[in-house]
Image 1 (cartoon, rainbow, N blue to C red):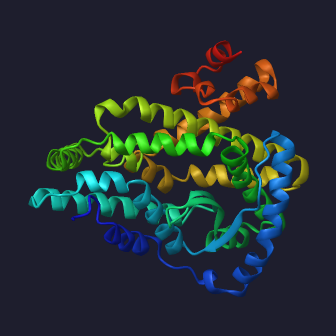
Image 2: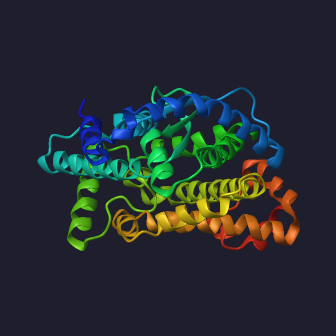
Image 3: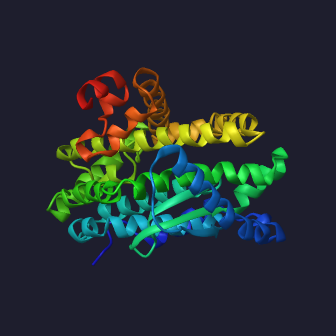
Length: 343
């Protein structure tokens, strides 16, 4: 069976864009590896105290290169999209073959670019397809940030670990969250058009129009959006509302703890904000359609802070009671409406 997306090709493109970095194999990476496990353990404890969310167990800490980060994400995508692959893949049409390679190239290029900037990632789905509980840190990016900006390694690593610990608390400390998120992904994938040939042709038309208009192939809906049908917009909205909440909540928790325990927290936050607004990065986000996604995460942070201002920090616990209490995309921009609905 022909794959809907030629993932090995995506991996090769991603690896080329990711490139290599001399710090990946340096003695500094070895020290980083020995340091991170204890840092993550402390970060988990602080996040639990801050949020009241109590995930069980101990996460696996993984140190990866940029190329390895690309490979792990492609493998996770492949596992999550496997049902769609089975339904959408068959076609010998030349245009379908070209469109699949374009999708793979742009996916690989996007991941390759991000691999040069991402610092840490909580892995909900492992590359093997199993349920995950691991935190991956991209060694050369962390070490380069510390060296280029003369950051205190202990503080910088703790600050990054706090953000990933917040995501772990959300997915494992809320009993239904992991299952709910994966169910939304399953609904997206299973709702793919049943006709393999018609869906591939639709994908080819999407590629053709995007190329003609100069619009991004992968828009704010991410990779799943490539397989989306018009009927799936409701599920996409639910996913985007959920991710806005989780990212916003994670940023607030990270910064709040950091301000109390890290002397250089303010400087680190300013550096990362400037890094995100770098013209080259901004151009990439516009090109790939991820600019809107970044705005949604910022809106998520504003949502969390406004809910706290109006009703107190504990009011956010309403979101963790049941899936129906999660804010919609519209409510992320209107916290008062969410409070009225769930209060």
